[in-house]
Amino acid sequence: MQLQASETKPEYRPEDQLTPYAEVANAPTPAEAAIAFADVAMSLADMPVTDPRTRDIVRQVAEQSLSADEAVRIRLSEIMGKWPSD
Image 1 (cartoon, rainbow, N blue to C red):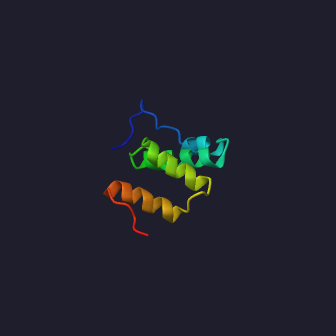
Image 2 (tube, rainbow, N blue to C red):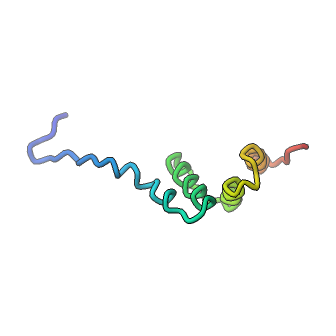
Image 3 (spheres, helix red, strand yellow):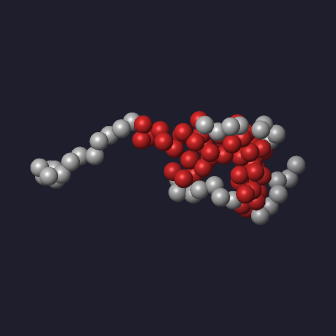
């Protein structure tokens, strides 16, 4: 399908792709940046990070009080309804 004379092709602007990342770049703390990044990533997957427990885990990882592996184990155990055995 070709464009008609009256139709215009939308102008491509590279900065449009960076818009979601502005919130990440402008976050005041690493924890807020991690949450903003998780929001962007999950929004792209059409699953926004709205669960307070998920936000708390993201914050703890960002503040390095939890390792990423520990956070994944905790979140998976919540989803599965089981606690990790250690």
